[in-house]
Structure formats: C-alpha cells, structure tokens
Length: 441
Figure (cartoon, rainbow, N blue to C red):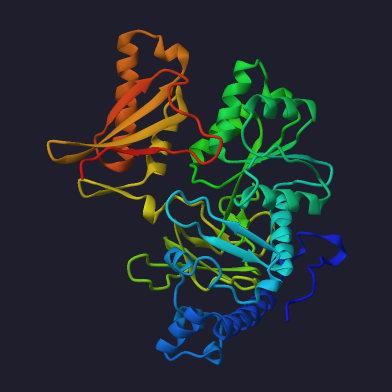
C-alpha cells in the first residue's frame, strides 16, 4: 500500500533536506527495495529483464546493488505507450501528463494521488530553497496542460501558501502588465522566455529593477552560467536553475539554492547515479557522466535507472546553506544534443557561454549547420545591441573577430559568425530552438 499522505514535521517544508545521512541512506534502501518489488510484480518488461539477468527483488541488499538493475530509456516509454509501464491498476491513476516531443507518440507519465503529493512537496521544497514564502506572489509562465511545468510550479507554490498567478505562456505584453500591476515577486518560466520578457520590458519602458520581482525559477531547457549572470545583472533578480523531467515527475527533482554551485537533489524521492554514457558503468561521485534517476517514492509509473541523457556530476561537499542532501552540477549538455563537427564534439551550451562572454552580444542566437565542399560547417548568427550594429564597419569587424576567437577558444573549431540586428532571430515562448541543421544527407 502507498505511504500515507505527505506530512511535514512542525510545518517545516524543508525539514527533509537536512536529514542525517545515515538515516537518509536507510530510507533510500527501503524505498528502493519496495519500488523494485512493485515493478517486478506489476510491470512485465521490467520483470522480463530482471529474469534475463537472473535477478530477484530480494537480491537488492544494499544501495550499491542498484547497479545490477536494468536501465530504462525513453525508447521503453515510447514502446510501452500509453500505459504498459504502470505499476498500479488504472483506477488508482488520477493524473496523466505527456512529454512535449514533436515526433511520433508522446511519452506518457501516470500519477497516483500519492505521486502528486510527493511532486507537490518536492516543488514546494524547491521554492523554499530559493527563499520563496507564503508572502510571495508567484507568476507561473510555464505552459499548462500535458506539459508538467505549469501545474508543477502551480501546486508547489500553493502548498507554500503563496499567491499564484497562472499566466501560462504567450501574450507577452499582458504578462508584463500582470507582473507590474499584481506586484509579482517570483516568476517561473524558461530562461529563454524570460530574456524575451526582458527585451519587451525595455520596449515598453519598464524597468525590472524598479518592480517587485526578486526571484526567477528557470528550467525546462539547458542554460549556461553566463546566461544566469546576464539575467541577474540586467533584471536585478536572483536566478535559480530548477531541474526535472516528465519521466521522473516533472520540475522539482533538484534546484540550486543560491548559496553555492550545484543543484540540491531531493534524493529521498529521486535516487541519483552517474554512469559512463558509453559503457553504462557506474562512476564515483565527482566524475562527469550521464545522469540516471530512480524514482524511489513513486507508485503509478516508477522509473528504474532512467537514463536522462543529461551530463552532470554528483557533488558530496556540504553546501554552505547546510542542506545534507547531495547536489548535482548544473547540466552542461546532453548526450543527444552533442554535435559532431569534423570529428570534434560540440555542445550548444559551449557556444552560448562563448557568446555571452563578449560585451554587447545579446542572448539570442542560432547555430546553423551546413555542408561545404563535403565537410560539415557551423555558422553562428547572433544579435548584438542596436548601437553596435549601427557602428562603424571597422568596429563591427573587430567585434565579429572577437566572437569568433571566443568560440574557437572553447570548442577548438573555427566557425563563421554572422552579426545580425536586434529582433532578427525568432523568439520562443517555451523552449528555444537554437540549432538549425541544413547539412546535406
């Protein structure tokens, strides 16, 4: 039977983030053992894979034994569409969400009431780590509906007692009006959409630094440390990186508290591992590799060793905020986002970091892949400030050269850089589309 409805001792939503490490590990093992048995008993594909490896649930004696278990991938969820990975009868499922994939069938995730309670609490703990309280006014500018972002932030904020403004996505001018007139103090959206809001605010003679806004909780897409500094400097807010994915629960798997580097993982619910993406071998804490999660407190559709394709590392050093739960390094890139150009591995996040290190460059760009003389090439189209774009040709050429050198220094390849005027590159109200592939096939 599921655990009882989530309660928090003494009303402290962050209490579980300071658990004694030995107690936490015991709790993780108990929950892992229960999850594995539930999946073995109720999920056919998982039982078949364990049987192939001659494994039984009782073989899981310690946390390290998790490495014996089979992986789950996005392909498994697509093959099991829609409900073949459910570990409970459908009459216990109270909510369905789906990924925002653009091709084929979406990835479906199912929740019991217990799962929604756990997700809500994880989101509330995330917001608490950012300093959000019941006194805040929270504007949720993630999409509502099958996408998990909007409702996740919505229920997490309501759990804290904050005032929620469910603006969803789109209608940017109205978003700005609401932000100003309602005295919004916290905004939740993608980082690329917030940079668009910043741009539109300038056009409307609005100054974020004179408004009530103080915290931004940004996620749903990779973004660089340089982008974070740009947002904090230009908007005068504290910008926080929230991590999650639909397959695990949605946003609220981890978040950076602002006291140090890395995102705190709510590992009493989501057990993390780092593996070698090529061999699948488990790597020790501190080494860079692919992030893998097991949902140890989820009943409707548990995920066992789900391969996220995100590259990170686990950090065990105690954060200055005092939390005892482990942290993960900011997602630097994804294995499936990697571009191989003339034998060199290139990640879009590397190019973003190079661009935003140059003064006058705006956080709006496209990476265009094309073929020339049989070889793959990269062109980076990037917006610059209006003053620089209208400047002397010599200064424009110098800026172009500076950007080219900055990118080459980071990725080790010479690329073409095209400076474009403000408002030239298409904006996104959700996840930004950065890469345009025009290569010959």
